[in-house]
View 1 (cartoon, helix red, strand yellow):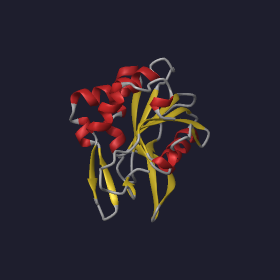
View 2: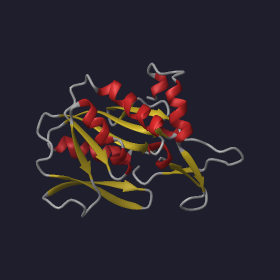
View 3: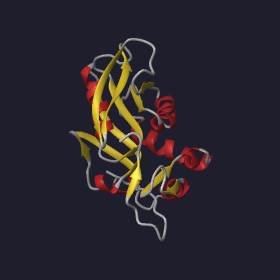
View 4: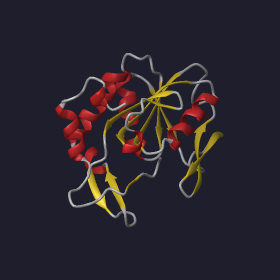
Length: 200
């Protein structure tokens, strides 16, 4: 569900967050409208509002793990984890973690990829929140959920800053609650063909 559908309708922070995201037409290839969140995280007020909304939602859910999906989930997950008193766990692409890992494969539009996590990073029974910047098909978040559940974690919710129109109206992803702040920004005189997402 979107934040506006869950008590934040008309909250000016959501407009500020949306306005802080830059749309780059035809990047990295023609027909793609890239949602650039670097301008969001470089805007102190919009970035703080983003973190505050997530923290307000999760501070009383007894979450002990905030798992961030590489790479842009890393921009939000550590700050949320710190604010709610949880540990941050990075879910990384293959070959990036130095220790023993477990991995979970998922489908991309043109192939496959995997997420990896250090063995022992999450304990059985821990309550986990998964954070990414954008959800499109949900494939990456589903893989992250499977990865955490394989070690016995309880995935409380998946959350993203941006939710594509394809997921509008969905409150759950593979049975897990799905929470999103804003829809993709659009540019006048451009047709939104696809929003680029490197993390699914």
